[in-house]
Image (cartoon, rainbow, N blue to C red):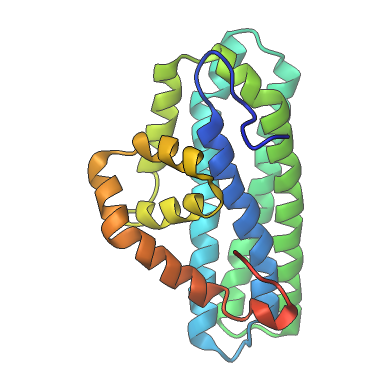
Length: 229
């Protein structure tokens, strides 16, 4: 699938692809990060747990917006109900694994033993695998239909709702996550749809704060030969 996939004459859904890249990358890295982190490094454990929960919450709200604002509109337009039901079922499966991860993070923070770490790493890898399949199906089969079915205003409503679901101040960090793998054109187009005050705060503070946070989170990945650009 090309980096410019999911475009159609109707609403432009490519912003969704940029957000999906964040979830693919961050959940892909989390298992490795947990695995190489010393359980005695209480500060780093807390930092990683906070990031993991933030990603889980962002994913949950992202899927909630789809459940509320996208799937019903596709069904109303008589789009293949089997495909929509498959998307909803995958959301449920992801939520189930996410709830386990949240509980395992709490145990890890309270210095759970090797078994706790193993369970957490396994579930993070499981979540990533399920998520990869879900996002692939959504991008290949669903977003082209969304682009032809939803109006620009309906799609804009989805984007605004998803942005508003992020905790106050954390939208700037999430913009940094999006910027990591967006090319120049993608980033310029995405940023043009971000409210001006948020855009200015990102340039003044968000970009720098994101770089600092991610450097700390990923600081030990080099020990297993993993380099994140």
